[in-house]
Image 1: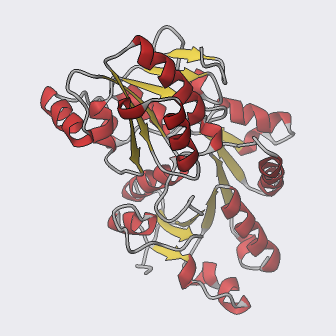
Image 2 (image 1 turned 90 degrees about the vertical axis):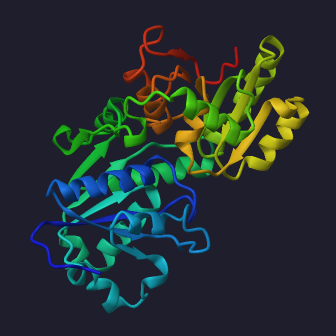
Image 3 (image 1 turned 90 degrees about the horizontal axis):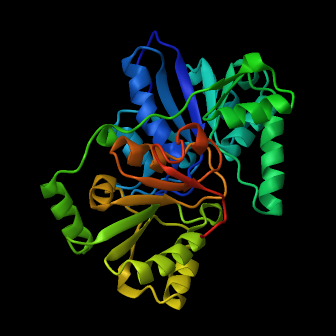
Length: 338
């Protein structure tokens, strides 16, 4: 699992939403790790604090990482014995720990407390991808995360707003940097050809002359896809040629399908479910809508803009740092269906 290397070995700790579902942090890690290795900056290895799902290799995070030749130590492979855990960094030749997300932060924080002579001596970097505080539990979880960030040697944020938030809390300016996520290869400057567009629409059962409005992401409460469906219901009356895509999977899927039925959206709304066929989704799409109450830098925004697809978005998180309303997109207040 650990070929000899003279490069620093970075342990990338992450816990995915579930074995198949990934969001911005997971996709960023999958995309950036091979690039860092190729540039000679470090040799990545992923500590996956989630059970893999070998039954679905196309979507399973563990399998997707291995296809990129990124070594993975997954949760079922771990032995919950003090000696095994304490010597893990040495056996893996780790010289740096990089955490992504709250649960990974908590795990590494605990390891540093239990094993200060091994885990506690390694430089610690954290990337803050975003905070969700739409209920009491999430507010508590965010406060706990902020406590774990205090002992990091460096913190990376994906937006200037996040950095300012940390500085206002007393974090040292020398320990916080902004590194925005990049645009995936498939979305860099690529406009779908008429042939690609035709094929993609046939794939999703969309009429070739439809005007397609898509919302894309994990189906969770902070993404406000309930608001998206409200907007779809209004637009369906004004634009009879409109077809709406809701792309993604998650805990809110059943609730959203029930809402769509109540709104009478019927056949003009397509739930794609969890899919990795994003080039096909974008090739079908005329406009992307982002309705979130909170964001860091949404990858959907970068992917759409990279392909020249118009975006209408709520003005939250780091989005106004990339979109000037009326110039390269339209921004609206959060929670405002009008």
